[in-house]
Length: 276
Picture: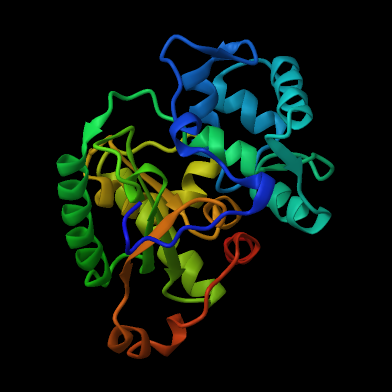
C-alpha cells in the first residue's frame, strides 16, 4: 500500500476491493442482467427508490418491480427510509402519499460500484487522476455550476500497489453554493432548461433532481469510463472501511471567499430545497 494512503480496518466489516468491484457482462442478478441492476442502483441511488421508480427505470411492470424491491431489501442491498424523508420524496415524485421509499445500504453501494471493464495499467490510472484534478479546479472556477467540490479522496485499488486496476474510484464532496431554497429552485430550473436546450432529455423526476450535480460529474469524467465517481457523504460508511487517500482539498482562500457556501447539506436537505 502507498505510504501516503490512510488504511483503515473495521473488524468483520473489512471489504476486499479486489473481489468486490468486478462483475461479468453476461452475468445475471436477481433474474435480471447484472449491468441493468447496476444501472438501476447508479441512477436511483442518490435520490432513493420506490416500486414505481424501479419499474420506470428498468421498463418493467410494477408487479415485477415490487418483487425485485422485496428481493433487494431481503438481501440487504436497500432499506426503507424514514417517514419524513419518504414524505418529501412522495411530494417530489408522482407517487402517492403512502408509497414506500428505499435507500441503498453499504452492500447496495458496493454492488453499485462494480465494474465489468478490462483492467487498466497503473500509469494510465495516475494520468487519469491528474487530468481529473485539473477539471476539479475548472469546476470550482466556474460561476454557473451549483456545487463546489470541497474534497476528493481515492479509495479501493487505486491506493494499493497493484500494477493494474479494475477502475479508479474517487469520492467527491459536493457542497451546494447556496442554501437559499428559492434561489436553489431558480438555479436548478435554469440548469435543467439549459440542458434541454442542448438536446438532453429527462424522463424521470430523479434525473431532473440530480441534474445540477450530474452535469458536473459528466464534465469531471469527460467520457473516461475507467473513472468511477461517488458522492462522499453517500458512501461515507463504505469508504470508512476501505483504504483511502485524500488527493484534493479546496484551498482555504476559496472556502472563506463565499461564507454562504461554508455549510454542508444532507440528502434530506437537498430534497427539501427542491420541494415545492
